[in-house]
Length: 334
Image (cartoon, rainbow, N blue to C red; front, side):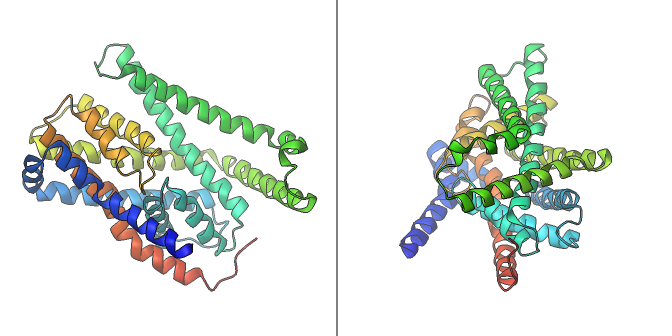
């Protein structure tokens, strides 16, 4: 059964790697391939440099979030964790391997999984908060008439959904001790497992609260690094579009491509392929088609996914293998 699962996973990963080319051929055919061949090399190199910079920004964020609680963690070590986690996230359906890899690597450093989960939750919450702020600004821009974008209802729904997710996380954090005292929802395990599970949840809650109580300057730096990372990473599609159309864009154009990527990444969560392949390409293509020719859209999608997905797999695979091999012999924290 394990071998069957591995072959199926390999097949899904191969399909995910081919998805941008398949979608591009469907949208633009030979015209898309010719446009990709004419893409400026220096601009593609700049996109690669931005990707590497994004990895380093996230690595610095991990160091601030952990604050020495997982032993000494230099920039190189944090960068290795970041690249290994991103590889696992891109190589597994729904990104399920990302969190598991993060917990494993921190456990090998003596940081218990329950507490590591809290750190990972703070990191994800920081991302959600940034997206909520950006969506609110974009909604305000559409309501004031500063820009005239399509799909206004979709933008508003996405903003409301993010707000509800953040509110739900906050309520669960605040009411967790009360929820644990309500035994019916924890009645399925035995008393010993129930107590252990409750201790792990409370330990994670304490770690989360301790992280949120870091000095305001540290929290501001974490959020600043988060915002800078996403501003740079979600500029990749804008650069891909500029390289395809061969002319300057405006701030509104950048904001639209930023919004397109946010909505596409949300849609990619419903894909069964690793990295949200298929859903991400189709979503971006559908949102760009009103503004560009089909062949141009297809080429932009290929270039964008090459830098924002395939590069993560290519560069992260050896780091992931080295990290797993290095920590396999160490005791796991409980």
